[in-house]
Amino acid sequence: MQVKATTTAALDTDADTIVIGVFDGERVAHDLADGTLQALLDSGEARTTFKHVAVAHGGNRRVVLAGLGDRARFDGERARIAAAVALRRARELGTRTLCWEVPHHVENDVIAGLVEGTLLRGYRFDRYKPDSPEPPSIEGLLVSAHHDVREVVRVAEVATRAQNRARDLANTPANELTPSGLAQYARGLDGVTVDVLDEDQIRMAGMGAFAAVAQGSEQSARLIRIDYRGIGYGQPTLGLIGKAVTFDSGGLSIKPAGRMHEMKFDMSGGSAVIEAIAALAELAVPVNVLGVVGATENLPSGRAVKPGDIVRALDGTTIEVNNTDAEGRLVLADCISYAWGEGCERLIDIATLTGGVVVALGSAHAGLMTNDDGLASLLADCGRRTGELVWRLPLHEAYAELVKGRYAQLTNVSDRREASSIVGAEFLHHFAGERPWAHLDIAGTAYDVRKPYFDRGATGFGVRLLVEVARSLAG
Image 1 (spheres, helix red, strand yellow):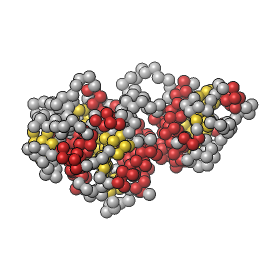
Image 2: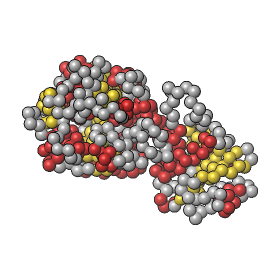
Image 3: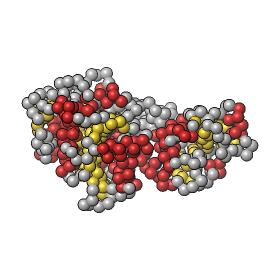
Image 4: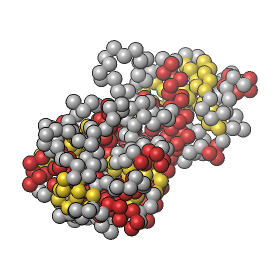
């Protein structure tokens, strides 16, 4: 779908379908010559109720009247939802080019939301279904406003296309997207420098925690390093750390079979990091970012790490691996230490880390745990703008006590079945230390989230959030 901003009036464009939104208590801003649209509202066939749509015809085009509800409540998230609902109706109408008339007197987050909701809802993952009966794709989106909104539209388009690419990565089955395959994909990114360590190099570098997870699989692990330099070397660097377990069986602490097929999504944090940095490079954001993605499978075999084994992490910490299904924190621990060693000044890690965060927060929020109040505020603010909401959970020495090991310095799980998301974060906190660091647990938001602009499957959660964080840091 091609996206373009224009100052041409929506009804004067060559789009075959126009979407005009109407708020409660307001009239149609730009009607057809015969007043058809207002008449449709007056008759009750069209309504201003949020998410309600009605269709009118004028000349050789269709007009979708979209109810936007209360103007005071209409923000970027409601814009995404309205755009998704309108796109669904436009598809049913056989639309080829869709034009959104930007409502008068709205902020840039609403304009961005119209683009994001359209592109997210327009996403398909059908590469394995060549004969899919889906209706034809809409070819173009026009965003019509009285003023120049090209930059707002461009940023929204680039970030959302990156999110959709992250969805592609996570939706791809693990037999095709292996750790080496993900590394090869990253090597193809433009505007960045990519270096890759294979499993032997990971082990030789001293990343014993990461290597322990990888040793049960015949697929060699990869540490993927992505450098984006928007302001040059020697300047502050933001580190983005992504867990990319391309398939997680749980290892010898094997998962139940019923939903194990979903474990291809366990690399969603890694895909978010890869595509966020790709978007930053495309947007030429003046910020330095180092991406560190730990890519591996977690499988049972005669070589697999065993419950009770003790491994040594990159920073020298010894760890009791008492549950091999708590593997993500082992991968991230070494990635965090690696990023600090490469000079990052603040870190954000993102991972489908725990089922506990789903119990606590469902799919509405990702869990945020951080040792830095400023970073917490930044992530919360950016999450509200992008609609990728985060909720801060506490770090505390009482939780840190739960990750102390009996036979080693740490254990990767606690014997007590409580606060599992926070305990996982406290494990990572050990490696982050007191330098600015935040952990995003996206297990509840990474896939099968029921929103109007998502279908089943991967959501690409975190791509736009991380892009917004980096853009905010760039000023």
